[in-house]
Image (cartoon, rainbow, N blue to C red; front, top):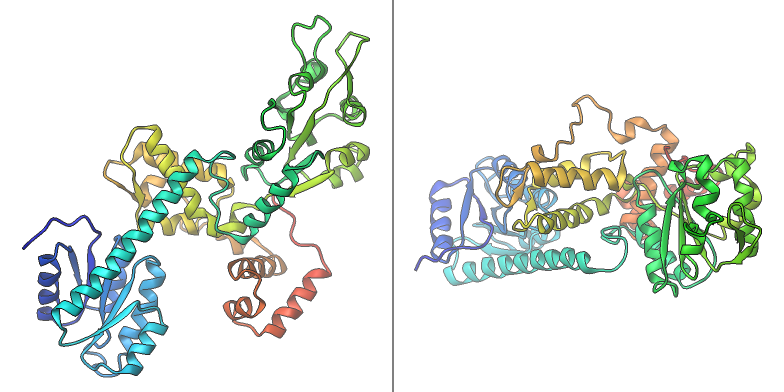
Length: 457
């Protein structure tokens, strides 16, 4: 009996049209949509363009009818193109060796031709159910982020680099020391500052922020310490018992920095034009995209002020240094934007996700967030966001990230990413880089003798 399917289609890959037809009819009789591919090349093309819940892959083709070589090569390629899609291998030349090799290369299960109907349907239905469960779990995790306290979306992380940052933040938040958050523009410094406050013992008290870069010099004293009339209390007084976030502190003129130093050292201030001293209890979280130590050496930033601001330091990695987080973050922003606009939940096409992963993101998380918002607004409808809607507009001849780096910088980036992907397991990282463990040791030792590449301003 035919039933309407709610699943993504199953990909059937076989070079015999009669076999493909029989499989598709069998699957459709059980409510499973199916698409056909007559060759490995066609299968790769479909997997790159469509969301699929499972693939049934013949291991033998006319170019090589007995060894299973073509099919065995196709299995990992499909897993690379669609990591969430389970692959079921199938061959008329069934042997335990082929089955083991197919599973080793990423196949989720194995069936033989001629197939036994109930066994084939049970195998495919189980794999589709597992795929649906994983996708539902992914959706629920993304949805849960919308209700989590903290820096909306910055916690959508799978990279070890960002997990280490969040573990550090968890420990720092419970203390009372001032914190300096460093990172490139758009990495989420202000969001992380808010998260430190939300996790701290001061969470019930005010959180006050001020952008020092946009603050006129003539307004510096009034804005931070208040005016003599008392009608406009300064940010320090408003933040009493809570947290004051000073964004882009590197922009504070040197002659104003000494005014800030007193309140940080003594917890005391005087309103502009008033001789009355007031005490405040404020934790200061500062952010900067500049190298403050270099500015201090150049006498553009007071070293004693830096020491006060920098009691604890958190450095946020650029988005290119936490590439594993691009898709989780994009999915989070997509779900949030759909909810905000009252639209049904959408998803990215595989080609769109590949474009997101391959883009350099010079504007970091902020640029990613804006790209997703724009894609939702400009998409032509439906539940799938295509690559064109992202409007990343990278010219075909634009250099990739590695093209912008020196050889030592490129090596540093590749080693760091390999260690992050493999949870700092040196053997697995070395295997991923295609070098020996000893060679990786030598490169790590070499890295210790020089500073890593400075972040791009």
